[in-house]
Image 1 (cartoon, rainbow, N blue to C red):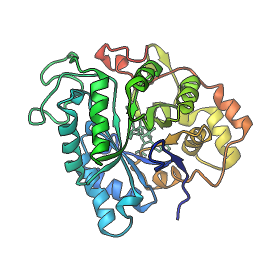
Image 2: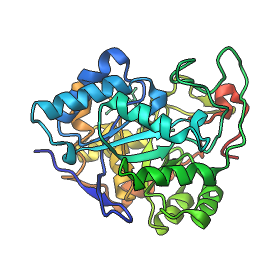
Image 3: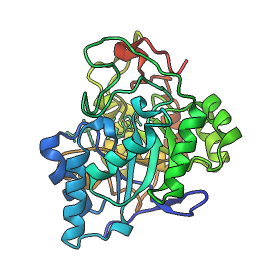
Image 4: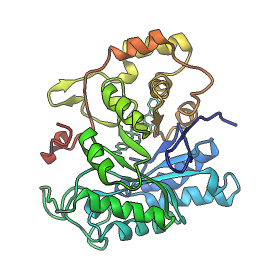
Length: 322
Ligand SMILES: NC(=O)c1ccc[n+]([C@@H]2O[C@H](COP(=O)([O-])OP(=O)(O)OC[C@H]3O[C@@H](n4cnc5c(N)ncnc54)[C@H](OP(=O)(O)O)[C@@H]3O)[C@@H](O)[C@H]2O)c1
């Protein structure tokens, strides 16, 4: 059995695995097998989203593994996210219910608000998932849905026992500070982009102090993003960086494992995605070894405040993280 470590979430004391499997960019054709295979290899947390366009297939992979007795539902930790076009208080519940039906599950373990960006509603029949733009248009259209109303609906999903925990993603400190003033249920987690080129040390420390668990996405930095030039800043692939290579040789681990373990050392969970068997296995093998202070110091020197998942750089003109 693969070893795993857990974060204990506030309020429910649920144990969230520190390593999970990310479902972004897993094609519909591959998703059922990939998720089934990930569970077979020992992954117990599956990180999905409506926006990834593969929830039906992800659900099939999960249910196949349960049906075959590889895992029980209660041993899995299923995460998914509310898309931006469903922030309106009338839309949160129907959006969630569609996702639950697509996944073919009775509840999720964690439901996150994907971005603090309320976009004009698009109904399921017109486009699903709708993405950032209204169908046929090429500019963002916002809608006046205040976050406190959206969060209240998220809380109702907990009351209805449909989501065991709720949390946020891509929120900054201002957004979380405001949320904490009215939340009856405090966010269990914050999911944000974190890797050695974007370390966000102050954010991580402050959020952890509030009792909110952090999950890192895009742990390999530019690996998921084709263009390595963002806002005029360029960066070489982290997986090939000399410092990462040197540390990986020192520990006889892959560069990918070093980047993932770096987050674990900060008590931050990770959700790597891979469709390669060997990487699926090695990305989970993070607990029988560790990085030392010297390794952490070297990696600390790589920070460039370089963000890849930024709606501004995508051409949406929204400087969300400024
Ligand atoms: N909340 C958000 O806004 C948000 C945004 C982005 C991502 N996420 C979540 O975070 C998950 C992970 O983020 P991500 O997809 O950006 O990136 P990632 O997991 O950091 O990187 C995935 C890429 O790295 C490759 N890879 C995986 N393991 C590797 C290894 N050991 N060595 C070398 N290359 C490796 C994969 O290729 P192969 O598949 O070919 O192995 C793929 O190209 C997503 O799947 C999603 O669940 C959330």
